[in-house]
Image (tube, rainbow, N blue to C red; front, side, top):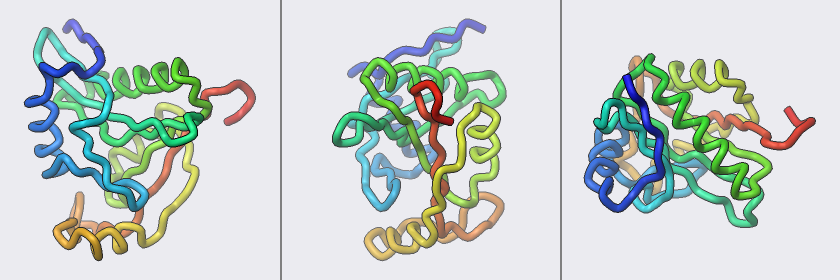
Length: 166
């Protein structure tokens, strides 16, 4: 299995949109009460044996010292695709001068919560009720998520990219 992680290129537009619609049913991704047009963000594509296998999109936060991962998906769970994409995002953030990289996941996503913790990411905040507030703006946001758990909150994870900060 030959895996390649590379920056998103214009030729990837259709695959990126398809991946976003498969996992989030939209190109518009909500995080911390903000709408991101993920198909227009920079990021990385994973290819396994030349076939599209995963996607990560990210956003440089105003001020430049932080970077937010907006989406992370893998078509090949348990094959290291997600971990490789996340490592690429961390390295990219470092090269951009970011001190901190962070992301959120909803309270129903136990798989993602375990995934990030296993990779050394730490809880940094619980945004109680933020999805309820988003739903007032975007009524189509689903009420139930994985395992029929009501989606209400976002859990924020972070990784500091400077020595001495955990």
